[in-house]
Amino acid sequence: MFTSPLLEKLIRQFAGMPGIGYKTARRLAFYILKLPDDKAKELAETIIEVKSKVIECSICGNITETDPCAICSNPDRDKNIICVVEKPSDVFALEKTNEYKGVFHILGGALSPLDGIGPDDLRIRSLLNRVSEGAAEIILATNPNTEGEATAEYIMELLKPFKVKVTRISRGLPIGGDLEFADIVTLSKALKDRKPL
Amino acid sequence: MFTSPLLEKLIRQFAGMPGIGYKTARRLAFYILKLPDDKAKELAETIIEVKSKVIECSICGNITETDPCAICSNPDRDKNIICVVEKPSDVFALEKTNEYKGVFHILGGALSPLDGIGPDDLRIRSLLNRVSEGAAEIILATNPNTEGEATAEYIMELLKPFKVKVTRISRGLPIGGDLEFADIVTLSKALKDRKPL
Image 1 (cartoon, each protein chain N blue to C red):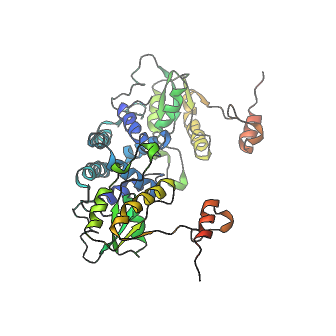
Image 2 (cartoon, chains in turn red, cyan; image 1 turned 120 degrees about the vertical axis):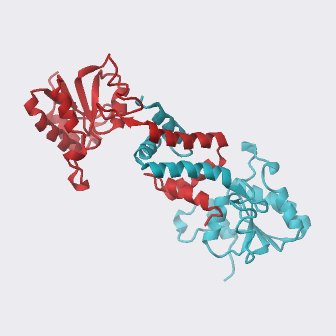
């Protein structure tokens, strides 16, 4: 409908991205059209570069440009504590706390039979290999939802023979939240997991 | 904070786009990361191609890959009726109605003193040139907001010496709307512009 098939093509490509509707895609395409040439070129080059240079760390599975990644190759990180997460952005969230000094293991998702994601689709075997090479604690930090809980349970079972300490991140009321507005599952979990003061 | 500066760069570039927050930018960057190589390459190439091949029609100012654009060079379009709009996506909206058989003139925005947009920043001179070469009707289809109305008034004044028929798209209650929820300005305009049945 536009007088430029190329612009329509760009709109279609943006509209194919997650959470981007047709109108947003159109706005983005017009934004590209108005962008200075060098900025547009830079964006195109970054897309190509990300695809060619960003790889997975052969140890933890996190995204990286060097193998092993910056965390796995950092001598100050405690290699004996492995925090298991679903995806790279979870590492990002945990790193922001500036509290964790161990290393990570990225599963690449969570068990989800409905979506056809089974144990073989996740980086579970390499986790077991890492544990077999020696580890003091495995922190299961998969998401506190059905898939994440099932994945944590599943991995916990697999880790039993290793006699390694296995912990799960605590679930309860979010800090700054309000009891009145907490959902019933979180509230009952918070009550069940209450701690002595 | 990520272990890949390149991915962070891509996130920053997406976050610089209009209406894209940091979290959406992150989701888009991970989407690019998971995209098949050829699809990512295609997107990068489309961005470069759009920048190099999409130009402005020398007659109407619409975006095009050929000059004049598909509408201006279409022998079936009535060159005597010129519909004046603010931007290329307005042409898109009007073309969708499949009702209009005239041609367009894209101003490239609307008068907005607060944003420093004056008459010289819009494609007004070329509109006057087109009208001086002969036209039967000029339809002012700028947006029905403060800037659009002011722009329409301004152009109407400039067109007076040409003795050309000047019309303004009608404003009133949107079809499918509800009187109860109409804003007061639209409602008073709809009342004032009432038509005999």
